[in-house]
Image (cartoon, rainbow, N blue to C red; front, side, top):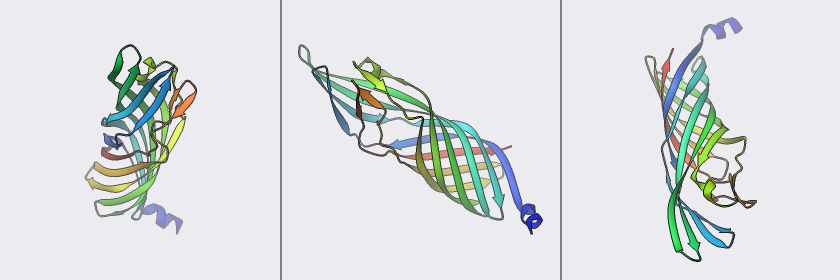
Length: 200
């Protein structure tokens, strides 16, 4: 029985790349920084890019597919400062985040089509930020955050197309810390993830 099951199993390895679009509404947080009132508003979530490897094990029409993807994404903020001598000053500040994304997709394959879903871990690697000019600003990124992905896929010869939606389990901006005070935007970001894979 075991030999019969193994005879129907398939293993593949390949490279995967793609883009993601993060869904963030333009919410604001109010900051009191050394007597100066500030408002930090989400201006725009830019497209993210990912590149890495995937593996897939298929038994009959059921598959398990872990991927290891280097992901980079950035967000633009509008910082409004009420300065006593100068009045109100606005500027655009950007932050870029680099993660190792590890989605573990489980699904069913019917012909060339796939229906899939599963958890994804985001391992924090590094970041760069224009917000560091704010007095007392510090980044308190978690080592890892988690989400859930689900979507559809299509296999055409050695090409693998994936279209997934992800919901994150952490609130966006929870890494922002100013003068020891943590902040967040009280929303969990979702994102659309489109990938193209090539089987080796």
